[in-house]
Amino acid sequence: MKPTTDQIKMVEAIISEFDAATKKCQELFEKKMRDYDAAWAILRTTSLTDQIKIKSERIKSVTTIGTQKIADSIDDEFVGIINYCILHLVQTERDKLGLVRASEITITKDEALFQYKKYLAATRKRLEKTYLYYGDCWRGMNQHMLNNLILAKIRRIQDIENKKYLDPTGDELTRSLMDMLIFSVYALVVGKKVASDIYD
Image (tube, rainbow, N blue to C red):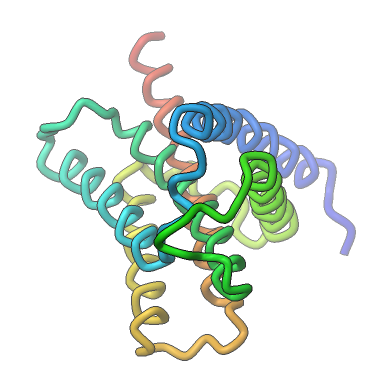
């Protein structure tokens, strides 16, 4: 069925918001590449899952208890989750090719940026293709609720990594990582709206 004009506008709106939110993420990734090279390229995917979980647990602590012992804002944590999800996707592919080695960096800066952009674009395409299944229902959620969805995806990924859930093709892992990235974009959009409402 051909989408209606309103549905087309809905998709165009979220894609614009996705691009705006991930622009900051890519800029941060490029800055860290200049400062630290591709140091992340020695990490196993399980280590990246741990990093995503740490970020998400920090968000849960702040949004549930209302206390924050670190300087990073909640938005910064969601930006971190987005970048770690992309790096996880990159490392998953590289690991299958035997390119992840703990003792040396086996990827150039140019190749790392190419891979980053490739998986960011693939996630954007997934969002555009599937958005109308649920539409704008997430706009009624807050950052805490969206983070709970991320935590659920983390548990599924850990089950896959621990062989408690079989994922022979790797499709479930890829979808879960992309979904966490998308949920984090939603959280950044929601956070921006809350801040705008406060200061209006």
